[in-house]
Image (cartoon, rainbow, N blue to C red; front, side, top):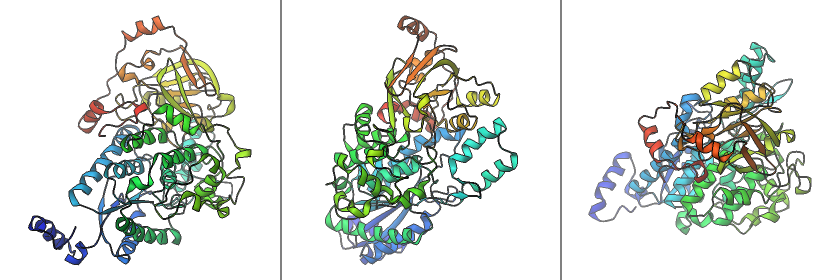
Length: 547
């Protein structure tokens, strides 16, 4: 925006002056600082300080920074009914950014973000807007260290199950609650927040190490200044988001998610982002891409290593170095150069027990199993790399629940039988509504020691912190009359992660009879959730509702 423009822009100039911007400031590239800072989410609280460092970089390189904020709900805090609003927020975040940017005429954007739905929402916005853009996450939370062990957030969730079983004391549980989330920053595990953070790095739109770096490090402040300076260069060069985010860089990013045992939520988010980018990537395409690479690293809760361990081992570049034969290394990076430039000998892993070579892979063909069968004709997802091999195949009787609340009540009763399959339905995008995460039931399954004998199946989602035989995103969902709505207590369900199948052992004619008897539970939807239920697409299509 130029200060010496025609009279139709006088109002804009006058209002910018009122804020404190001078005419010569308006002459410079106007950089929107899209900040998800708030005081009620540890992943986002550091972003206020980072924003100041970013602004310093923008000013130093001849740009004018202007900050605005977007919502940032925390999945960990938004449990039970609060969880209904978290996935819908993804599209709302994207739409609010798009609206603000187009209304105010920014020349470039810096996205300050963390956590599960905020990073995907901002990536969706960046894809829709297509301006020069750089992403910067808050960095990682400090792990909690005791004389006995090192703990991070999923250990707290699993301790709920331990308390129910009586395997830890109330004092220990209290200590976990007070200390496991040891600092600000993103939870030091490989959940959705960090999965999508490193996804942005591999896409080429975030600096390397921005996700794994501790939130409190001086390197983080320096990185923020670099980002501020660089976005002004991108504006001058006319290099927009689509210059860096191509089909090749997208495929690379999906491969990295798989090679490191990422969150199942990444499946939904990647498909949603791809649709906005105009890339034709559906659930089967996603499966094909992720299956091309071995799993060479796993992190909490699927191993003993946390995100700071990942950083010390060399972070994203070290993983990419090991799988570079599978990648297109000609992709461009927003901080300069190509992926090939970034993957020199210095990128080799420093801790081979944390990041393995492809010859010593933990799994040979991707971290996810995308399952199909008569229970999920349009597919479903499980993180195979977080499942004990003894549970790759499981066959057992269904125990059916119509909500998360109902399964929690059952689990707390202590009446969960070994060998069964817990079916949680009417938790899909429309049915919940909101496609809640069954994160606490899944964690309790582990904490109660049942993850080696009991499977869990839902048309809802699971947390990035989930491990064990937890199959989510069953599609079509129960609310839409999917086969999961027809399951009855005692029906046999067979799951095979290697064959990638999930079947209800009930013949087709019986299923057709049962469809006529489906009665939906009372899951009310008011206000924004009513609009969401009326508009949202299936999980297999990214659960989009505003795009």
